[in-house]
Length: 162
Image (tube, rainbow, N blue to C red):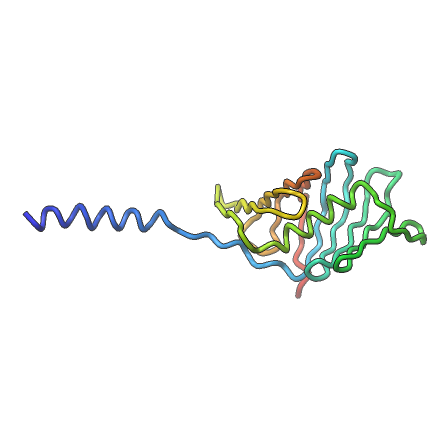
């Protein structure tokens, strides 16, 4: 009788242990380049994103034509804009969105991570609200970002760390 009861209990314990798989987010990439489609409340554009090291990046706008050539350069906490040799620290609409993007990829505490069809969904909080990153298994394989000031779709990405 004890053997008959022990078998279902052991099976139940094994099955519940399998469901508790902890998914860790991939490490923060050191450097990469990506092509982005950005949509915010005040902007819609495409740009090249070059991540030089954590929280140090350059966003070069390629579309729309009127903004092509504008670069937003983030160096730690500071951001400046360059356009055709002129430099400013003006408050541009895309600046808040790009700052959120950099803060989101650097966030590694209090994250919720789930996996669906081989894509990780990483959610957490930054200074302006909540974010969700959709990412493949590789550390630089970003797919999209849902941020408080808009969304960012990653059109292509290349690892440049080597």
